[in-house]
Picture 1: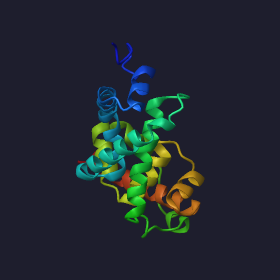
Picture 2: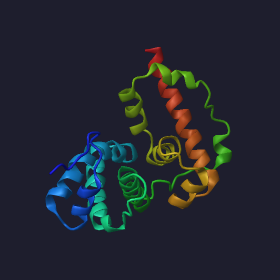
Picture 3: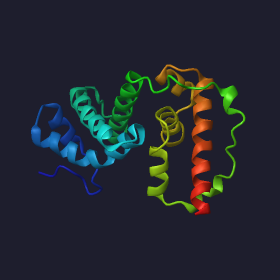
Picture 4: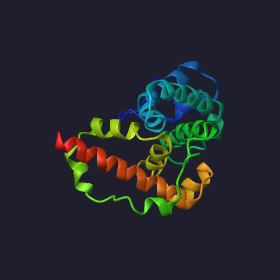
Length: 185
């Protein structure tokens, strides 16, 4: 019995068996998704231990809500939303944006020189993103990586759109400064 298709995507049979509580199918889902979802958790949490906790919590949520997956769209995309939302709930619970600034304070920050990113390696850039303050990192990930709008981010985090824009601008400025500092070395 084949659990995966040729392209290693989870197939419908595996998902249906997991919905029925089949432990082998659930393990197959865990094995297929854990390596893909851990970097998602790490991007939001910024540190390995916290990301591991979110990964665990995300799988608990995924398996408890597995019966809500309708089969429309990508299972991996559906699962990714669960892991992102699990990370966001943790960040909201810890009030990471409590020291957020509004957009007016961010206007003075420069976000030019995007070509500086081209000289960086993926791992180096990911490390810089993970070192951003939690609020900056969260908004940056939601906007740049996940493609959320500022309205969606504001709603998800319980902040204003201006605060979302401010956090993004400040994250970009901080990344730009770190990139330029790295290039000088």
